[in-house]
Length: 255
Length: 326
Image: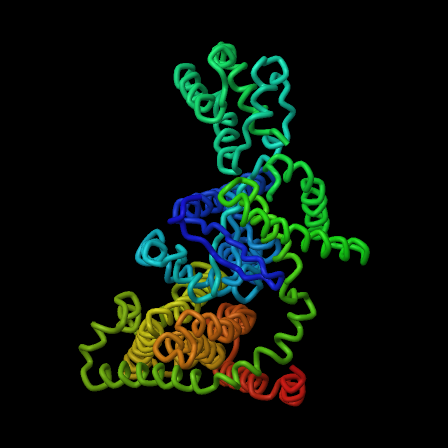
């Protein structure tokens, strides 16, 4: 999370400030595409299921009583317009697309959206869509600090990101650490700040996907910087990637 | 002095995980009192942990994790009252008509714009017959030139329902757009109102000139009063948005807009079921000669009167007491 990325600050009655990361235009387009696909496939499937049951769909539609036909068309129209509002209200600000992308609609004070806010922001799609494909909405998102389209501005809502965190990395057992000769020395002699720990853990998390050369080089630099080892200890630790990373893990997870 | 990060995580993690579990239970609904108390305690602890992390471990994943956890718990605990089905009944019994009465002047202004358009369209066509070429769609003009109603022809080919559903979705789109374009400083709403007024006025005048006034009356009298009322109300809702933007009063514009939009959307949502109902009338009763003209006119006037009686009278006695309670 860089300092420049926009966020929503919420002051709670517990006197703790919450900082929620705001979802940008990319996340929102992605979520919209997924929702549009879902609606599209819903209609395609509905049509195919229907045509399996009834051989002559058009004939049946024309043969329907007038009231049934009107209700059907009204229903289809309502599905298109009410889909977003209903799913947002019932699934706590997340349509299926938003859930997949990991974003959520909230009010500007961080509380969940209600029926009225959701209805406003979704009815205003009529204007945000103008002149084509949400041009107005995208411009509004680009020029507002928290990436809100006109519907969000009117409803007093915005979209926040929800991330998945892996806390295991802090507490995962350092299995290989005991095999490494240097680890016991290091744990006694160095104490690291939270930032250093975070840096080492981030490296360990990504190490399996790094190029071997880069993995070795970065590992060596970490050991140089945080290790505080004697010459022969360092050579032993740097002998292989598992021993380097085992040492670093033991170093970061010292209690 | 702060404990090392892994120690902190290892010690506090069980509490965070049980808070996550409780939040999942809360979303499914049906928590006991004991669980609620536990949720409260765990939330306060997590908030304290967040404060701790903000001070000693800023910018770490733990900090971000706690931030998100507390945000979810905060949203669960400080929930606004949820809308339930009984609220829907209350909305139509009291809230919608009360909102309309409170925002009556916007609806009146909207009606004035619509009437202005109507007069403009009618005057232009009456004074300058060639103006119809500008204001009335080509298809409609062709029918009028042949002395027929454009609705007759569609009916002989397709059953009335095709017309009805087409008309209904078209009207819904106009209504939604009339409201939503209020965000363009109200200009979009004004344009839509005047534009629709001009078209209807011009068509009416053209029909009257060609001696088809009665035929037109026959078609529009059953649904016209309610439908035009609804367009006017949606226009009022759009003007509310415009007014909040132009003159936000003592609030910042964003806040004024969000606040006023709530009243505006109530007007639009309230109109939706009436619009669907009147679309059925428009599709089945208005076209064709199944019903005599006088019956259609009577029905239209009655529906219009009932609609406005509902809007102006419903929930009047309870409105005063309930606002005082708040």
